[in-house]
Length: 421
Image (cartoon, rainbow, N blue to C red; front, side, top):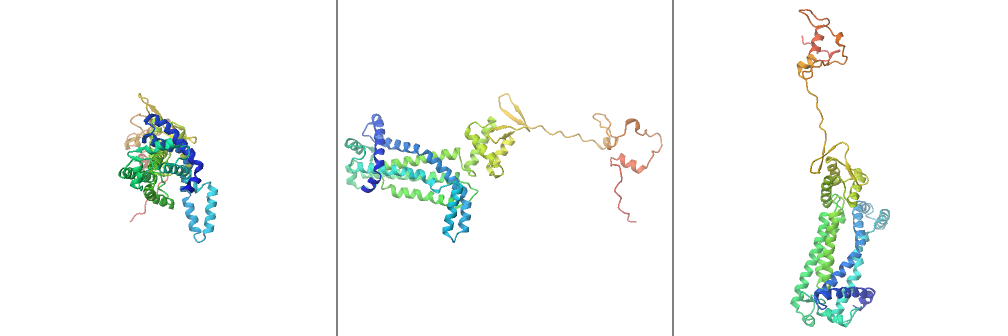
């Protein structure tokens, strides 16, 4: 432990100083020797660290999505050079360099907060051993040893002996009940966070080894927390449980507002966005404009949910622009109701009236009474032949006239089939 303490001594003092500062604030409210003052100090330390790690969390999201995109290419390289591991590694590094991705970027938040975790562990272990550390002097050490969280001392562990627990003014049963509940909650929160990521925020159209790896971690991580959790002091369990809850809430926010393309979360998000845009007739903020702009820029490469989103806008009489804005389509007329809502109506196509057989034969429509000709070369009114009188036979071939009167076209007719005679 002395070796670990020397390795993390550069951060042990800052961590103890932050805890003492928060303790001075909460101690004035709840009392300096209470578990609330020391417990909330640890929770505040976690929140402060995670706020500082938000930029790294954003990089983690981008790196994870980039790795998901590269999985098909990585699989091709593995199959092509499966017998040459050195060439396979070279091609992998070349692919990472060309795309600007880094596999270690997805682990940045965990790696960045690891020193704080070990520093806090050493601080709490020193409190349990009755040793001063950092800025925690003898007075603060005595106050921390009196602090209990639901009956369990801040520095007690599940594996402690009864004598050690009694020295901290508690019982072994209370310590084990509190630590067991915290370990279960810690494992469940980790499992739910990973399951939420796998079921909602993964591109289901691409089956890659990365998905299988994440699915395996969903079951491995809770077991790791359960095994190692029995060796953590109560204060460290408070730290880790708060970290898991923060990660779960942060993950829910990202899935709800910035889902992975092709995932179920994106389908739900685009459905909500389509309703809001159709209601207001425009994108409301910069984030929505960025989403619409990215979808429009994809063109033919849009996935199923993105195509459905664009088609929904078109049906509502809206058109998505390349800058992310949404305007009214030119092919539809917008009608505004009295309540202020706007609906898009498309003018109906007018169908021509159908004439009866007698109207077609006479060439006159009953509705208007205007003469109509079925032939292309209309003759003037005064050049038309006179009406029949009596039994006078019309000039020309009678068969041709009968065909013209029956509505058939003039000109050379199709010869009839030869007779069977």
